[in-house]
Length: 493
Image (tube, rainbow, N blue to C red; front, side, top):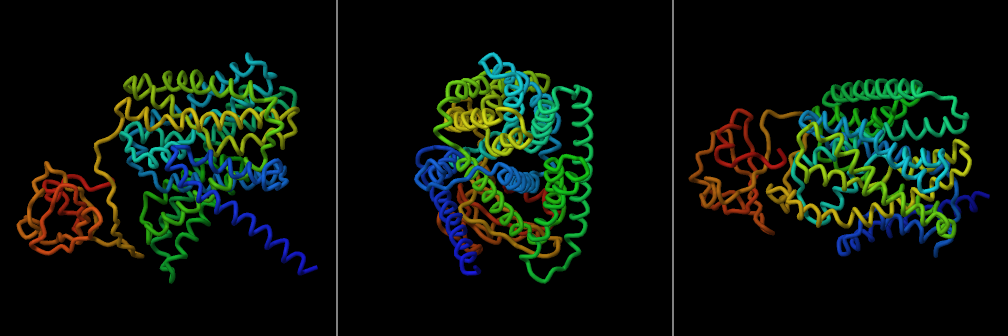
């Protein structure tokens, strides 16, 4: 008996490891072909599924929903952790309008279009709610793969919108599913009150837990550096679970908690960020693998015509119109509005939400899942593959310095008075062409390292700074004004 359990467990782990390995290796193909990673992860899952080469029979929507919810919470926490609070301040209002009114307009327009295309009204409403939010993580994965640096206002708007709009899409989907099952006994006032309550409870508890964690973190004095990401991971789990149990939006809460922690002092920050980045990537892979395993290609044929049509309505009508209506009051340029409207990629959230109507007992709910499959695929191929070309065509690339090929970090348990920053040597800067010995640096500032192409240059006095170099300086905060006169702004600011 024990031997059988051990063997079965080993086979399950081996299968998961093989699927994970294939998904990771497929990322190299994405770099060469320009295909979004999400589509390749999805393909690996389909190949392993019951009608694919792997023959893995999987139709457990309950397990998929639970795992997907956990995965999405971890992705949102990572997004909040890496979103500077200055970003929130700069584009908070336009991103918030997109994440609320924009989601509602997109859902309404897509539901209307789906109904006109022949879907029953309950199914049309569910489709509109499920795919009403965007997944900017997929956008930036495409941009990074193509080596594109997006202009800050556009990039920050997409980034913050993606972190804020998922909770409303989730609330809409669950509310519509409940409305369908209960025969329309829920009113618009009920929906509005539910949205307000979930937002207030989720946002308040999430921010509170994050602030509490940010106060505790610097005082923990843990013996091992690896325990700090374990602590933040525990906070992420609590930030999702506690508000959810109390009737709030756990997804909004976990994003708010990540924001609050990221804004504070995090011991061994670089290691903590790397761990959560790896966890977020693993979560994305798991979600797309689950979607691929749940897909039955033979069943998709009947849904193909309406699925493709709904995807086109979303890409060319619902999302662009919603973005235009939301951003016009904020004086965005037409090309910026057009770009944000087009780059509304679908990724992780629809995977989870498409299973919710099935679990709620909505009649013909599999039709929602099949249509959402086509929306995700068309979004990845049509919009995802066109993002690099469109970015250059609309001249939305930034002239910011390229990232350094090597990164120098100082990791510590406590916050030090001195700071380590990197600076890009542009040919217009006064330090370009100068020797280190000739630089009028403050007494409390010193050059630590010069990164030049594939070389690491020792900071000796006769070393010359050349355009294209990345220079690491350690300095006191009071030296900031003088250093900025010489080197400009630090990279990443």
